[in-house]
Image (cartoon, rainbow, N blue to C red; front, side):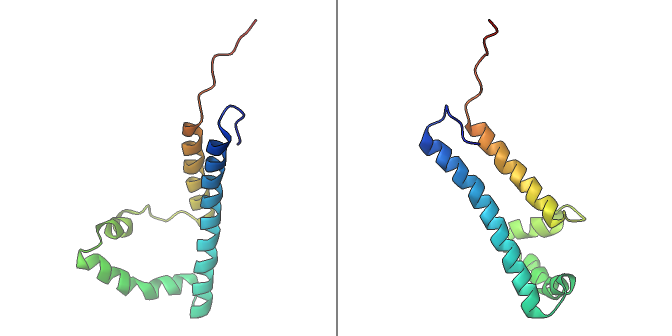
Length: 108
């Protein structure tokens, strides 16, 4: 991923973006698994238990982005692996957009 034609500080910043995405995803996965484990419920039971609270937040009208997520998120939801791959592809697309376009190649 490092590019020899990009300043080292830019390279390091782009690597940090990638690492931040991966680490954040892993931390969220661990945190969710721990919450489910502590509750003693299966993941689907834990989500069902949270539903009344989520409904209350949506009905309040105070959280329009949360409401959109709840109402418009793709159904069925992507698996965690697919969510990770989807997000990783977006991160890599952004990194690629930050790199200079390859110049014309010489065919002498």
